[in-house]
Amino acid sequence: MTLDYLRLSGREESHVKLVEAYAKAQGMFRVSGAADPIYSETIELDLATVEPSLAGPKRPQDRVSLKQAKSGFQAALGSMMTSSSKKGAEAAGSSHVSATTGGAAAAVADVPEIATALDHGAVVIAAITSCTNTSNPSVMIGAGLVAKKAVERGLERQPWVKTSLAPGSKVVTEYLKKAGLQKYLDALGFNLVGYGCTTCIGNSGPAARGRVGRSRGAKPRRRVGAEREP
Image (cartoon, rainbow, N blue to C red):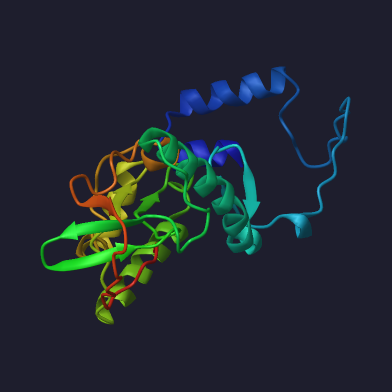
């Protein structure tokens, strides 16, 4: 299969033969009927235990299963708000506010045409990346199809959400354009920002620079639209 992939991806035949010769010399070339290799340690994995997960809430190496994302966020929010309120109170020389959603300051998107208050947990960055999905077009095509449906139904991103599209290869750009899907991603604000690592490793840049501030007692006003990541 490896040799087939090399040929399908346009490698020179001399390169393919070099890889084949090296794999055979190292005992890594698997052929039908060959004896099972002997390993110093064998690990078994039940695929039924594999489930989608998120990183965070603070460190990328922390893992939270997708079905526990809501409860995990609620559990982490209290400690984060307590720490934030205490630091703010110490800086101001006053007692800190109790760590509850109602007692904390709300972030406000300073957008001329709409005054919108953000609550804790609101999505402010939405990125579509394909560094590990470049060779899996179904995932990226799926994102494009979701964007198409969203545009057709009149959905928009919220004004405070910073959106971006960062494929791992120019091939992704080509097949999204040829499939007629890039225009829908663009319409939602998922414009091409470059190729390679971006938001996943913290290279998102500031969230809505100059548009998000902090205030107390702000009353939320909702805008018809969607807060979702294709």
